[in-house]
Image (tube, rainbow, N blue to C red; front, side, top):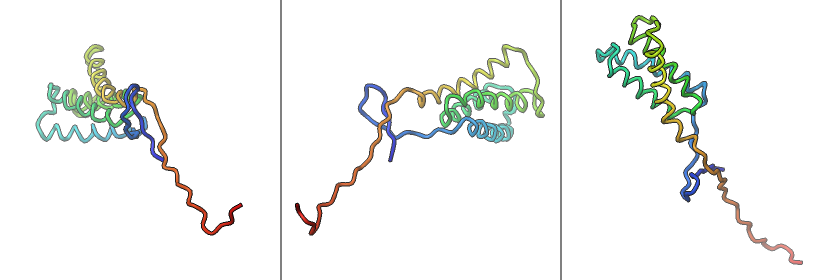
Length: 144
């Protein structure tokens, strides 16, 4: 049995896409950001520049596309931890750079993850499509 959905008012149906659970999204975000930091170091962009901020925001959006909307704060928090600890202050040192700056960074990462996870949460009709077997005619049976 397959599930399909359609946006209200449309007649086209698409298969239901399974999204990652919230906990798995958080774990995947931690692993993905842990891979991004050495990649930025290899390119020579492990400084608090617009390129590094953009790379973290793009990765947050990619992770948000595979996650549920409830996972956006986890993805944003993981991005902020790695950006603050390894890019801004380096050497895995977390420091507070001011409420406005840190909240803006955290909000950017969470908003990027939320922006691509919201289309999966729009209300859709769900229908069941099932092929019913056609009964075979009786062979050599008695007729009453």
